[in-house]
Amino acid sequence: MSGYRNTPRISDAPARTTATSDHWLKVFAVGLLLWGATVVVTFLTGNSNLVPTIVLLGSFLVPATLVIWAYERYAGDLGPDRLFACFGVGGIIGVLGASVLESYLVSPSAWMYVTVGLIEEAAKLGALVMVSRRLRVSGLRHGLVLGATVGAGFAAFESAGYAFNAVLSNQGLSLEDLVETEILRGLLAPVGHILWTAIVGGVLFSERRGGRFRFTTPVVVTYLGVSVLHALWDSTSGIAVWLVAKTTASSWQRALFELGHMPHPNSEQVHLYTLYDTVGLLVVSLGGLLWLRLLIRRERAPIPAQLPASPA
Image 1 (spheres, rainbow, N blue to C red):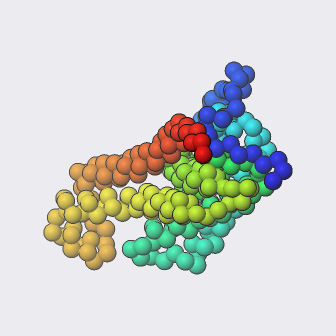
Image 2: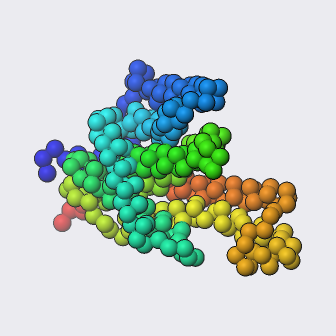
Image 3: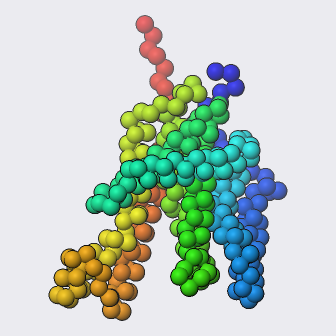
C-alpha cells in the first residue's frame, strides 16, 4: 500500500532534540500554576464564573501533558495534528459511545462493573480504530502512543463530567469537592484509561498488516484483559466495603449490611476502608504497568538471526 510504514519496534522512535524534549514539562508547570491560581481566586472571590475554568484545566492538564510527552519521546513522526484528532475526536467518540451503550446495557447487578469495563474498553477501541484507520503506520510503538492518546481524551472528558457533578451539592457549589475530585482523578489518570487503551492499542497495531486492522486472538484476549482490569478498578471501593464488613463489623452492623443498609462506620473502619481501597487500586495499577512492561520487553528482545540455508 502506497505510503504505508511498518514501524514495529520501540527502538525505531525518532530522535529527540533538546529544543523539543521538555515541552511537556513546561505545559504541565504552566497549566498547574494557572489551575492553582484559578482555584485560589475562586475561593477568595466566590466568583462562580471561574468554575468552568477549574473544571477544564484540572480535567485536561494531566492527560494532555502525557500525550505531549509521548509525542515528543516516541511519536514525532506522526505529527501533532494526528494526535490532536485522536485526543479530541477519539475521546469524544469513546465517551459518547460508552454513554449510549451503558444507558441500555448496564443495570445494578453483581456483574455491573464487568459490563461497564467491557463497554468502555470497546468504545475506546472502536474510537481508536475510527480515528487512526487512515494512518499508514503499524507496530507496538505507534499503537501504544495512539491508544494512550485516545485513552487520555476519554479520561479528560470523563473527568470533566465527574468534576462538574462534584461541584454541585444541596448546599450550592462545593469548591472543596471539585478540587478534591480533580486532584484524585489527575493522579490516577495515567494508570487508568490511558494505560489500558495504550496496552490494547499496542497489540492492535502490532497485529496490523497492510494497513488493515485484524482482530486476532491476541487483540481479543488483550481487550478482555484490560476490561477485567477496568472492572477491578471500578469495584475496589465495593470490595473494600465488603472486606471491612467481613473483618470488623459488629453483629448489628452485619445485620444492617445484609439488609442492604450501610451502617455508620467507626474511625477504625474508615481507616481500614481507605487502606483496602488504596491497596486495591495499587494492585490493579501494578498489574497494568507490569503488562505494559512485558509488552515492551518482548518487543525489544533481539530478533533471532536467520541461519543460512544448507546447500542442496
